[in-house]
Structure formats: structure tokens, C-alpha cells
Image (cartoon, rainbow, N blue to C red; front, side, top):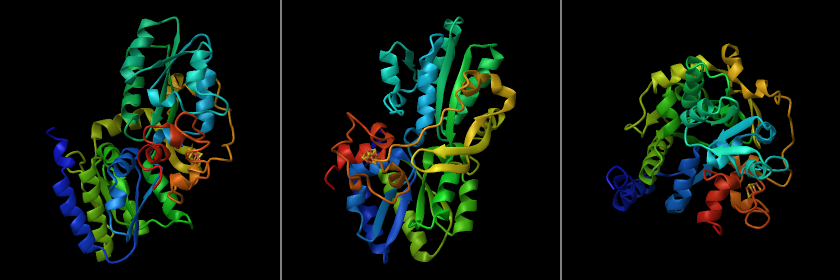
Amino acid sequence: MKFISEYRDPVTAGNMLDEIRKTVTRPWVIMEVCGGQTHAIVRSGIDQLLPKEIRLVHGPGCPVCVTPLETIDRAIAIALRPEVIFCSFGDMLRVPGSDRDLLIARSLGADVRVVYSTLEALQIARDNPEKEVVFFAIGFETTAPGNAMAIIQAEKQGLTNFSELVCHVLVPPAITALLSSEENQVNAYLAAGNVCTIMGLGEYEEIAKKYQVPIVATGLEPNDIIEGILMVVRMLEDGRCEVQNQYVRSVRHDGNVVARKAVAEVFEVTGQKWRGIGLLPDSGLRIRKRYASFDAALRFDVAGVEVDEPEACISGKVLQGLKRPNQCPVFGTECKPEHPLGATMVSSEGACAAYYKYQPLS
Ligand code: SF4
């Protein structure tokens, strides 16, 4: 298939892997912060094809996985209200809250609908003026523009029965927090190409300079990732700490200016709790006061719902690259995709789900 097969070509992959083997002389730890990249790495066995000097660790790159437990509980509390139609992308429905998930809420009578875009949720709001339609707006910088545009559209169309329950997280503050940690072992980062497509490279240049780490904006196909690794290994071996762009077919230095403008119009930066990691300053987005009437957390008064994470799950360490999923004592036994204990086993982008599916015994 054109535009896919060339990024999965085994000969190209083999040549780049040879180049990595010739270049590397010392041990390096490289982290990817993108669930799509994590799955491509584990599915293609890239981690097993690299020379032993290179260790790949998987960062907090899955937005479903880092959505805090209380946000799921707030979503369920809103969804169970009789006047509400609750709209969400499908992968959020099975993420466990403290005692149930949205699918169970649906079995209890909640009107929970899977949508494929915010525009679909807006249409449901137009079609059901007697109902309150709430969209579960989660994700990294990649989904924020669409969610911002939905609120702008809702206001333009005079829709008063549409709101969003927002849990947006930002990648650069998470990388900064990991680099500031005393436990940090990471020497270089593969930045998510899809996030950089929206946000550009500027924030990563500041991080690379301040923390002296090479960063490469990298695509999501196997050969993108291998090339990204080759680029960071060359910089590591040369002692260069630059930001480079492997994903040139999508990423521009300033990102998508129109999308960034929409995000800045509707959202403002705020502290955000990450599941398994905790509160990180300036790592999330919330709806600005000007658009407060579209904020479901305020409209339904669930902002005060707080809960603790279950003790058995070590996904916080997995998300920080300190443990591999299969080092979790309950991986593949008490915790499986059919009955997940943590969000990293639920989401199609979660590291635990990727290991369970592709490398359960590695
Ligand atoms: S295997 Fe399950 S319990 Fe263990 S870290 Fe992953 S999600 Fe949590």
C-alpha cells in the first residue's frame, strides 16, 4: 500500500538497524512518549532488534492511560443522570473507574454513545434539544483542537445543551517532570510526531537545551521509529543535544498555527493530575472562563470528586519508564485485557496491553 508499505519495508529497516549497530558504542536509554509508537515498537519487535546497548522505555504516551480515576468517576456520575446523553470515543468506555466503567453505567440505563468525532456529538445535541449532551474530551495536544472547535461551533450555533468534560494533558511538561526526577534514567526522547504536527518543535528546543537531551520528532510507523532511534543515537554518540525532525512529511517547526489558535482561544494551561504519576504543574488544559457554560464539570458540579489509585497496579512506574509491564506481579494473571486492573491494560495504546498482545513472555 502506497504511503504505508515504504514505512514498513524490511530492507530499509535492516539497513538502518545496521547503521545503529555501527554507530552505538555505549549504553543509552531512549524513551518514546506516544502510545502509537509503543504499540509499533512492541508489535514489530523493534526493541528486540536493537543492539544490546540501547534500551527502549515507554513513557506516559497514552492519554487514556493517564486520565485520572476521578475523571472516569466524574464521567460516570454525569452519564448516569437521566437528562444526559454522554458521548465518548470507544476506548474510554472500558477504562475502570473506582468501582465501574462507562459500559457498566450503560448497562444500568445511562445513555452512553460512542462517537467518532466531536462533530457527531454536536449533531446529537442539535437532534436532542431536550437533552444535555456531554462529550468526554480527553487526549493530548492532538485532540485538543477538535474539542476546542466544537465549543466554538456550539457557541456560534447557539447550542446551549452541549458541554465537554475535559481532561487534556500536555506532553512537554510530562517530559520535563521525568527529566527533573532523581530516578530519571532516560538519555534521549522520541517525541510523538502527531503531537509535534499540532504544536511544532519550539517547546522541545527549550527542553533539549535546559536538560541537555537529544529529542527527535518521530512518526508512528516502524521505519519512522527506527530512523528516529538512529538520529538520537548519532546525537548521543556525538554529544549533541538538538531537536531534530524525522517526521518531515507532517511536522513543521511552528506546528499547525490554526489549530494552536483554536486551542488557545478555548483552553488555558492548568495543573493536571496524571493517573499513576500525580499532579504535574502546567501539564493540562481547562476551559477558559469565557466558555465556562460549556464546561461539564461545572455544569454538573462534579469537580470535587476525588479518589485514590488502587495499590496493586504499578502503571505509574510503567508510565515513567521505570518498570516494564511484564515486571508487574499481576501482569497476565489478575490483570488481563478481559479484566484490567489499570488503564494501561485497557487502552489500545496502553503499554501493558501491547506487551500482553505481542510480547507476553519477553
Ligand atoms: S499489568 Fe495491570 S496492574 Fe500491572 S501495571 Fe499494567 S495495568 Fe497495572
